[in-house]
Every structure is written in structure tokens, then in C-alpha cells.
Length: 391
Image 1 (cartoon, one colour):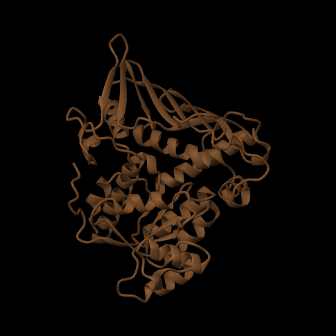
Image 2 (tube, helix red, strand yellow):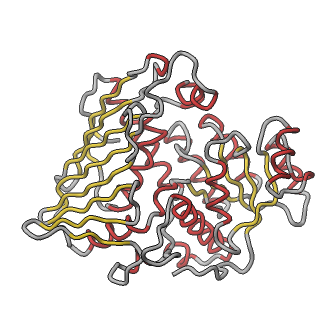
Image 3 (tube, helix red, strand yellow):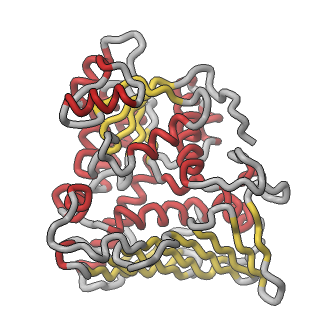
């Protein structure tokens, strides 16, 4: 159980690129990084491309004015001159900038925590993976939902054979907040439906990569052998990128899966759900009720497992903070992700290879696999929604 004790000898000196006043995700990064005492200390940032707005916002969240930069290149150059310069940088900017910023940070000798989807292509991911390895640097990916503890309970129960052989994987990440979009999109929405700034997908990359990663973390030994993707732009202003998609999978153990993702699921507020069906029982989790896990054994009464209870596996209790009956939420999940990345960075800095290998966190390999999945989905969709071998 976490109780606020420091896990590192000192906080990592942390900076941000993006995540300014109008950012949809910047505050989630700061909640995640700063939740646990002694993991990170926010020392600098290029929060906004407008230098005046950057400084105004940065000082309001406690950063010294001289360490607020309107350009990330200047931030890297100036911080390198300081004995107390930044050590870790989070990239919270639109998709098309991730590769350039991440590469520049690694070349400057800095660890990186990057938004998803990591980059546009698997080739870019592989290049960055090799660069990070050559410099003994960590690249983490903010799959922010993956820190929910009951997901680790699902993983443990499947490993223990509690549901038998996995037969079906049912995934969903949908909401309706773009259902009423007209021709005039907000700035935050416009870049997400522009292939030049978003990449080759919208909701598959913006939403579904979260759920894809979580399923892979729960089921690390299940690998997709082939898939079929059917995607649509149901709101014309979102074209040519999809606002709705269905993906079917065939796994290497004979199991089958499906994923539905949408930003036009009007009225839905239970956005993300995961159901794993085995030969003996099923497990079901929802982001709307993240403290709960439903365990349904064929022929027996359903069981409702609660976060924080001593009957849970140690994997689910490792990042426990509040105790049972006291609800946790997305901020806690982000904090778990950031803390795990901090522990990985600390182990890498100390050359503690065994400790590093023991840390479970969304790393560059996970980000690469997310991009690989997107490439396969696009290939299927552009082939007339045909089944394609997973490459």
C-alpha cells in the first residue's frame, strides 16, 4: 500500500512540452506526476508556443518565470546549461509533434514520457527504441487508464486459471461528445480529424489504443494473428478520418475478440469496458466503476470484487492508496502510471537491471505495439475491411 513515503532518493527534475492552459490533457499529467511525494518535481516547461502565455501559465502553476520557454528547443538548450537542469520531459502535444520532440529530448540525454499514439509509424518507434536503448534512457507512454488496480486483479486471476482458457475478448471505448459536431470544429477537435496532425486515424488512435494496451497488459501471452477493421466518418466534418470503428481479432490461442470505438455514441457515459470470457468464467470491468470487478462463474452466483480488499492479489494491492470503501479515480490511475515510470527511470539511472525488468509500466515497446495495431487496422480498412494477417 502506498502511504506517501518517498520511493526515490530524490524527486526527478521534470518538465513538460505542451499541457498549457487550454490543453485537454496537461492537468492529468501534472496530477499523475505530482500525486506521490518525491517522484517528480516540475521545474520547467514549454507549455505554449506563445512565450507570453507560456510564462503566464507556468508561473501560475509554480514554475519560475525564467524556466518557462515558448519553444522546446530553447528549453532543452537552456536547461542543459544548468546544474539543476531538467532530467525527464513529458510530451503533451498533438500527435504529429511527438516524434520530433521525443528524439530531441533523447539526444539531449533526457528521459521521455510521451502521449499516445506514440508516433505515426512503427519505423519511427523502432528508431526511437534503439536511440533510447543506446543512451540507457526510458521512454514511457501515458496510457493513463492502465493504472487502475482492478485491471491487475483481472490479470492475476487469468494467470491463476480462475476463468479457464480464454475464449473471447470484448473491448469498448466509446463516447458521444462529437455526435453533434457541425462544420465548425473546436481547435482541439480540428487537429484530431486532420491526417497531417493526427495521423491515419482518429478514434482508433485517440481512444482505442488505450483499451488495446490494457487488454494486452491483462493478456500478455495473447497475440493477434489476423484482424478486420471497418471504420466510418458518420459526421461529415470528421472525414476522412473515422469517428466510429469496429475491429475483429483472431488470437494465437484460438480465441476471438472484438473492439468498438466511437466518439459519436450519443449519450453514453460508460465509456470504456473490458470483458474477458473463459471456458469456466468471465471477468468484466468498466472505467465508470473502476473500483469494481465482476467475476461470473458458470452455474454459480456472480461475485462482485472491490478494490482495496485483502482478498485481492498482491498485483492489485501494490498501488493501493485509500483503502476499501474510499473511491479512487482516473487521477489515481495516472499517478500509478507516472510512479511506475519514475521507478523505471530511477532503476535505469542506477543501472539496476533486475529492478528495471521487474517494473510494469507502458514502455516504448508498448507504444510501438499500439502503432503496429493502428497500421494493421488502417491496412484492413483501406482493403475494403478485409481480414489481414497481423504484421
